[in-house]
Image (tube, helix red, strand yellow):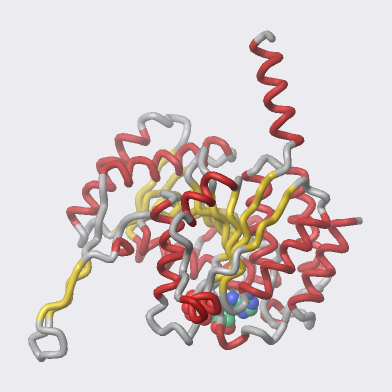
Length: 363
Ligand code: ATP
């Protein structure tokens, strides 16, 4: 077979093959929003096969399992993507199961880029005055495997008046370099014009210095993309005062965590925000930005749109762009027609909102 024919042959196999997706609804509202998001995906007719795992607080409280011994290996080997709801439950005060499952996936599957698109679907969702959907359309790329999340540090003289606590912020050249490359490639592949690196290098001089040097080096390989730097406190101000000026933002694990909650508020709240945990070429994991939200769990109140948009992001990542677009269009219709949950101004329950979107997708 000629090279071009071989490529076409491979591409057609990729387009027609069934994508295998591992599903972990987890805890709290995760158990409500994820099954509903799956119904929306099914309504697209996408060629996908779901396998659901019961990892979460209930399972942990029954037999102590957080994730089975070969769990991460199995996910990477047997699945094209992982779709997660939320992990966290007041009955497990240490949150050990959430750490082992969620941080375990990010760290052990080396999902180093946490991609959080921030898009305002409709002006009515934004708490800012006189803002249109054109004004809020940027993406935060959060480093996902290092920083203060590596759980390094310790306590000395615990409980005594002289107690000392340290928490290490780990930044490796490899880790910083690959996530900055990811941000530039993301900008290039998505028709974006600018990458901003945000840090606190005026205070965190060693870690910030590494980020600054690597950002300048990597930027030279993407001359068509503009660059910018902003301290993270200034970025928070900018996100509220002039969100239109933002394009692609790359930052460390903790700053990324914090600024994306603020960003979620700009697009209608935690119930609207989607995210992907990506390692290009490997099995990646997709989860809504919100957590398990214990106060509203089990009440059919949770907004399923964050999960539904996350599912669309996962389908697009798997090459199912038409199906992803159908879902995004249907969510936009639901917002415009106020077929939403209470948190974003509607009066529907979780199930009813998702069912409306699924029906619109299937039309
Ligand atoms: P976790 O410990 O798992 O992160 P959490 O309750 O601390 O959970 P979130 O789940 O992120 O944090 O949510 C904080 C609050 O935001 C919730 O209590 C709820 O009021 C609101 N919220 C979050 N997600 C949704 C959603 N999908 N729909 C409606 N409200 C939501």
